[in-house]
Length: 337
Image (cartoon, rainbow, N blue to C red; front, side, top):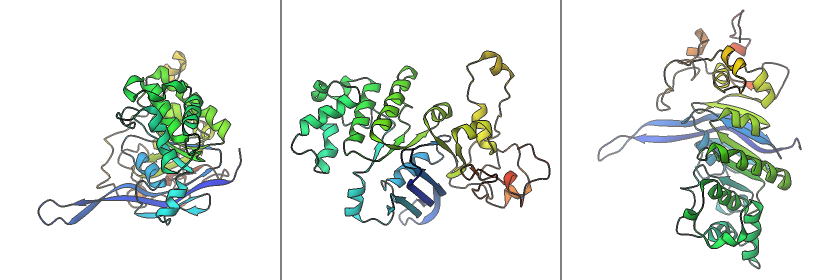
């Protein structure tokens, strides 16, 4: 895998305004869906993004593709500033950046045949004008579907087959980068492995780069090269999948890992799980200081006032954590973190 960076996200914010009720509607607050996120993805790499529902994962993916306009911050794709790009430049970029959606039942137009669905990006970008039907057949075959199915409608297919249609559509413009927004969450467990194996094969054959969004940490660990753990609009920890498993630093990431079942019954019986207190705070009114402090089992004084910075506490520059326990300026003299 090449080590050069394809995508850079720098201090990205996506805030949605909340307006008062009544005839004259005033701006009263903001939902901070994404609040100062920074990371990079290398060419040919799969970056996993994991966190609880509502933490901002999907909004972050949409903002990277400019399907949602960021409030602040910057996204650079292969050296191009996506956040500053005009309509013409965004159109050119969208040939190289694509998305696989979560729900294969809602993301395919039921009035269109799957051939029309897969061909739509080709028509929009004026690609394969000479052999449109042949290109659609090749794409369907690439994802394991019979090209003769092109005249059938989405309701005639299973959930796994529909998701393969969605993958074929995402591949139509020959992109370099794909945001995979929980592509297996709506599928039966027996189907999930087949879809993930297909995505791995396509990545190997086509040199794709993925942002793989999920709430299933076990799936993310299997599929990703590096993993970013997100909580309430911020990145809590980023690490290589092996480092995240062997040396988890953030208490939230530790709690997520403790909930992943182990297939060995004897080992499973001896494991200690971290049960988090309370519920996830609302992004309308996040806690001061560290956003995780209201649920953290290791909270101490600085957590209430100072926002932790994502930094590398050890020699590994790729293992970053936003936690005062690993900040020399605040960490207690004795810690079991």
